[in-house]
Image (cartoon, rainbow, N blue to C red; front, side, top):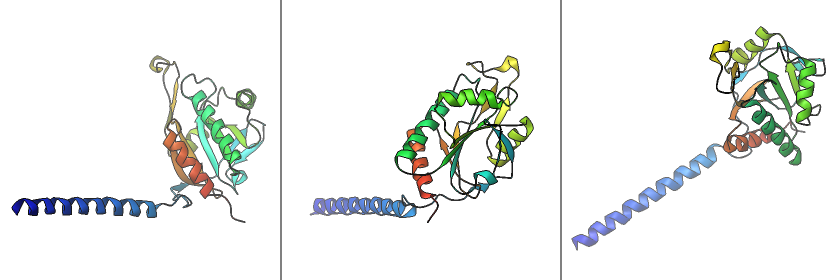
Length: 209
């Protein structure tokens, strides 16, 4: 009789655990649906930089639809080619899904990455007019990245280059910005889960009407 009581208690306890797990899953699913817009994480300041075409580009010129930013430099031999390859793949996937967005690659090496150099680099990735490559004055760029995007960027002394020989360290995050210039998410470009989340969030920010 006592054994039956213990067995019953065990099954009741197991049932309670299962119920808690199921309820937690339902709560998580209700907390963020696939079509929910991501939260506002901050706002970019006004800025004016130079696109590879030679025209000036700023926050106001990018208004109206979501855009994805990344940070690269053309002399980079480590992660930058991978970032640009991922950006190109993201662009193709969004186009295939009929999702509208723009893409902006900011150089962190403006003394070298002139509009002409960026045009050559962009051609490697078949970038059209919806994928912008921008440069500008170093302090303005670094201020925008640090204070606006809230990401790190720094130059290393020549004797402190990393294993690849790169003298500039910067973030590998993609940043999602909405049509009003507000930051809506940060995503690890090298992680599949990050790209899945970014695809979902860009779709959720499509202009209505």
